[in-house]
Length: 174
Image (cartoon, rainbow, N blue to C red; front, top):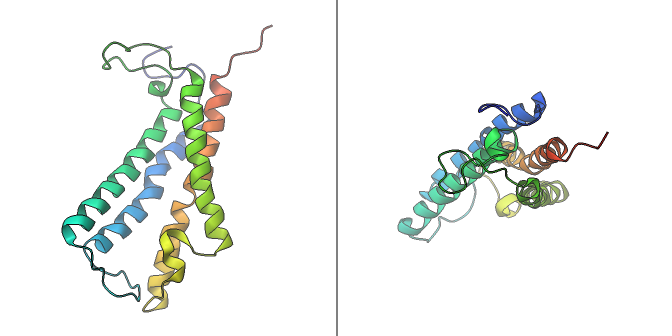
């Protein structure tokens, strides 16, 4: 295995999906930021009484974690998802057991897929927005589009985990 390739070729669709995951998370992260600063984003609700010293760090950390997780999913298609990178002390160069990557990816994918199921069943029930009225249809359409992108995470992660598992499973004996 060379430095920049995986043990077996990664399907092109998987590479594209892994690259798009951070872009799926970005609209939700950008939606959260004004809400953290008290802007209602068209929601017809009373302003939050939570202090800014609480909401701003909470929203920033949640958004950063969302993007970090999306970027971490690149390990499902990159060499550092198969072998510990050289810059990691003690473990450098060791092969990562496939299930150490597959199991957390499948669990995360299932968790995010539950959001999709909830969203479909309730038409628009992500983060409690289904109970919220909007000042006009444009705000509601924007909220719907943002949450629709976010709920695609689960199926995308599950597809990447399946491709990773298929690529990393032992080859049959000949």
